[in-house]
Every structure is written in structure tokens, then in C-alpha cells.
Amino acid sequence: MNKNPLNDSHQEPWIAWVDDADADGEVGDIYNKWKAANPAREFFPEILKCFSGNASVLRGVLDFTYPLQFNDGQLTRKQKELIATYVSALNKCKY
Image (tube, helix red, strand yellow):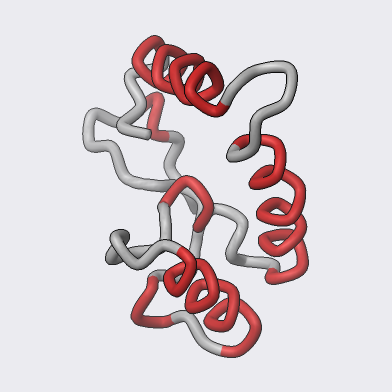
């Protein structure tokens, strides 16, 4: 049974995910494509790994969120990054 990290002093993910070394098949393809597009990053982001239990969901999250987050629109990319950083800090999240 998964532990809720809010009730545990040791913070570990309680959502099962696929680690980089174990990624194969469609999930492995998604990880590899992301890494090829982000060569400065050694590992696939943990914030996205929580969707790796279902490759179609993971692909859908990336297809939906990346154009919103990483392109200018009503807000610039810098503004979006500042908001994300602030919210992460409020949540004491390393992302």
C-alpha cells in the first residue's frame, strides 16, 4: 500500500512511476524523445514521471502542456516560469 507523504517525515513518491533505467517500449520512446529535445537534462523530469504508468496519458500530458507552458501567449514564457517557481516555493516543491 502506498504511503501518503503528507503523513510521513521521509518524502518519497507515492505514485509508482517508471525510472529512466527501466523505461522501455512506448514510455522509453517518450523519455528518449524528450531527452533528445533537452540535451542539457540528464534525466526525464520526476514531475512528469508520475504519468509514466500509462504511456498514452504521458504523451497526452506532454502534447497538451508543452505548447502552453513553453510558448508565449497571453503570458510570456518568463512570466509562466515565474508563476510556476512561486507556486512551487509555496508548496515547498523542488520543481
